[in-house]
Length: 398
Image (cartoon, rainbow, N blue to C red):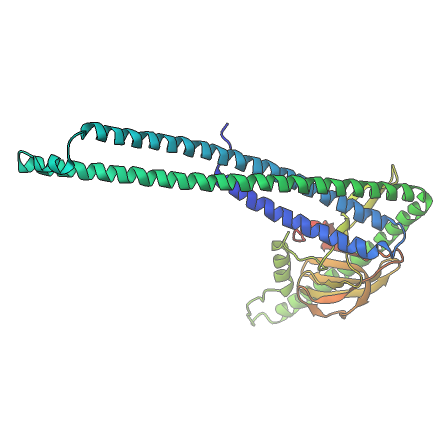
């Protein structure tokens, strides 16, 4: 099977460099959050989740480095193959040139070129001999140019090969360093798991409290959505009644703002900005095993995003603030309506918008709350009508 072309290798390298930069940015965010809170917080599930996510990102980075090593190997193989081709081509050119010089010497041995031309018996012979000498001179010149060009290409490829081998050594050193950091991180993870396992009862109470808070949040947003739906139906009924009473008046139906917002929100799946500038998802959406307690599962109807202390929280899309409240254990909570879609932001320390206020994408609506363990974490949900959705499918990739 033929290997990848040079163009494919170049495209793969560009993709790899982009992925490396993305993962490095995520690792810097992990470092910033963990470094800031290390001396401030007690050992907690929040810290373990952060370490778990960082571990996952570190493993992804090592996998990317391994892909880069394979790519460098392909580049080296292609360059080495091209060098072999150029060396063979240069060898053939030199042999051809040597044969040309030798043949010319044998044919013209003892014959002066000027005499060769001017001893022509006829003008036609004179012309043909002159033309032959010119063609021969051009051929020799072209042969020399080809040899120079191939020699230059060969030198360039040899320099590329040297650079690629240096790059290979650099990536190998980087991979070794990353594996060392990965092992240190695994040791830290194991230490956290061991410490938290000794607090099983406290963790179970924390899980139960979190589930209760989640349910309160769900009931809250369902009540808000149901009320919005009731008001919309009442408004539609009034409009229909008014239209029935005045049949003579014909007017073009206006495109509802809510419909436009819903369509716009739906079309931005996977492209919606994050509610905080930097951070990472510490608890994903769905039901999954607890990180320390065997046989225990966790359920999350949104995503939890760990970020920096007092990080500004922003609306992820244009809409209207429909509810501002406080939920025990979840701090300040804001619900924003985007047509048929809703986003909810919980664990807010401060709130800087009012109920009924229109907001745009990236409007600052508050700041993140930091708990007693030193964890600054935003809880974020997305809904379509009364259906809760996975927020990560809407957020842009980091």
